Amino acid sequence: MNKTDNQLLLIFGASGDLTRRKLVPAIYNLLENNQLPENFIVLGASRTNMSDEDFRTSVVFENKFLKKKIESLSEEKIREFADHFYYQDLGSDYDTSYDTLNAKVKELQQQHNTGENVIYYLSTPPALFEPVAKNLKEAGMNDQSNGWKRLIVEKPFGYSLETAKAMNTGIQQYFEEDQIYRIDHYLGKETVQNLLVTRFANSIFEPLWNRNYIHHVEITNAESDGVGKRGGYYDGSGALRDMFQNHLLQIVSLVVMEPPISSAPEDIRNEKVKALKSLRIMKDEETLKTNTIRAQYMESTIDGEKMNGYRQEEGVAKDSTTETYAAIKFFIDNWRWRDVPFYVRTAKRMPTKVTEVVIHFKTPHHNIFHGKQMNNKDNKLVIRIQPDEGILVKFGVKVPGQGFLVERANLDFHYSSLAETKVMQAYERLLLDAMQGDATLYARADEVEAAWEFVDPILNYWKNGEDVRMYGYAGGMWGPENADELIDGIGNWRNPGPNLSEDPGYCVIC
Ligand code: BG6
Image (cartoon, rainbow, N blue to C red; front, side, top):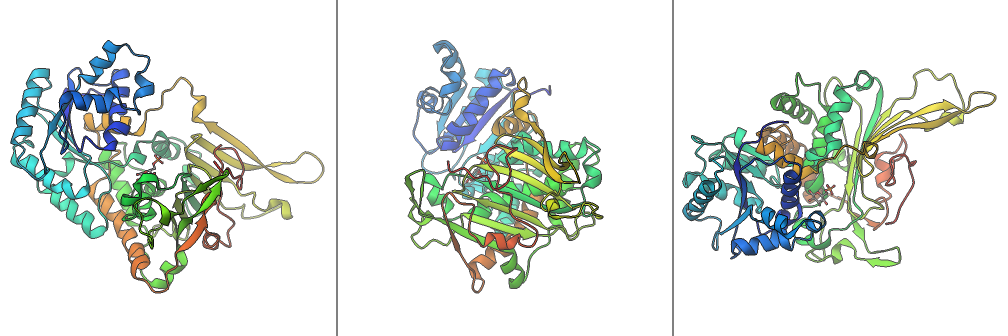
């Protein structure tokens, strides 16, 4: 186990939902697994006027996301955990002098003997990233002479290529790139990291991992929920910015990348950037029109319950043109992937919640078993990110009896079978990595910009292009019918069920 230095974690925007929902439960898990350093405390900061004790009540004692984890603990143990948390009110503005904040940090560092290592966690609206970084620097809080300083920034990282670049150069005026940790919680998922292991720790997949054997790659990210109470944020974002530019392109980069020379952070990140830079950018309207589809979920009745259409959701404009479904077909311009189409889709209000990568292999180049039974019997490798995390290989076997009838069989591995192994939650893993200075699973500036470079023309086309359609789909369905046209000629989307081994087409209305 790597060593974790004593340190203080300062969360900006600490009164927000993320602290309660993700960060505090992650810190609790780290404590429970003895992964926190001996001297460690958390200082929350935001514009809400709260005492230390109010903050503890909000993030520990009355935190519904922590309840299950701590309900069997004695009061004394819960108090012990809560005593790790302190709070500082920043007043009415984040863009202010941080002298008082700095004084509080120093006082806590002395009181708890944490030394001067600090993580600043920016869980604020993105417009505040640069002012917070600037004020930290001006208050001398980025001085590393007696302890390292790291800055974790939450998504969204930019709204476009231009804003992402401005954000990078803005923050980099005050913090060095190696101090900046851009979080993408998909990289914290075990199954996403396992993509690297599947490819580079086995000799049976990698020789086939190229245009000679792979017919196409399909990635699906579906959520059964709608936008819920996040309509205000989501309506200014949409599926492409919210999921595709970051989480899904990160997955794409792991599928596409060349073998890194080692597992060192920069070796892996260098290969990921190269992969993202080889995405063929769609430039002309015709290409954009035939290779992208956007849609919005409509009013529907699921399991007898009436569900809002997207435009009826709280915080969403009545005439919104924000997509809740995006499907993109694209190519990778490099030696390995030339002419292999990638189909990636993401959507809300689908039949089930699932994320998976499907590698579709080519049919054998010389088919000795003729006949219809060979249809749709191509080999597939399904890498299930969530739920029922695991890997499935589909291959043909002979049906017993006369002749050569071929049927599809499954070879599957489910993470749940590793009952002894505790799978770390994404935030838990990522927080621990940042605490230990390991940036492998954080996005570098050039990665983020390369992803935006690919996404920007699509967003511009959707906004300004001529005759751009916004399709509708009934909530609880696999998107608009037109999405099938995208993948036409090579089969259908694999519409997966919640269980890895189920066959395509299985549909659950949850
Ligand atoms: C977030 C998006 O980054 O990821 C949400 O903003 C989305 O809209 C969420 O629901 C999905 O994460 P997960 O881990 O539940 O797949």
